[in-house]
Length: 235
Image: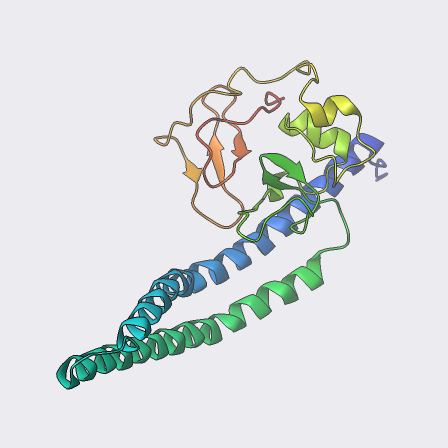
């Protein structure tokens, strides 16, 4: 029995499917880590408030003219603030230490599966990495494994989003300025409000998606998306 050689289109589809499947596995592994580390992130924000309270307590304790009783109260409050900070720091360290094997596992899986295909990350524009120079320290980046493996042109056609000029300096202006015309075959569900009653995956570090009510495809979205991104109709 002869085996028919895959066409270039079929081979390309297989490459994209392999990249997407691998990155979805890697994203799921990272989601386990970020879920485990989330309490530490919350405590880190609380730690900032605790340190502000400590500085205020230290200023009050350093005021001249306090009576011995008032000085003792002020010093006691400083000590209690310091104790709470120490407890919070210890809890943050414990959570991070317990979550570290999950991060190590995600990195190992990435090293095993990733072979260099193009990845895309959503922060208003689509970026090529999590380290774009336009990001700030508190920028929240959403990985889009559903479009991993695509070229710049394929990503524009598939996702209908605007590419970052820093990450994609060679991209045509129409892909980075938002002036590109809608491509033929774009699904009519693009831009509609997200219907949470339909199957979806949301709230994770990466791999979030919603179901388009028109073409019934799973469409990648950011964690805070309210509308269905532009996408091609299911063929």
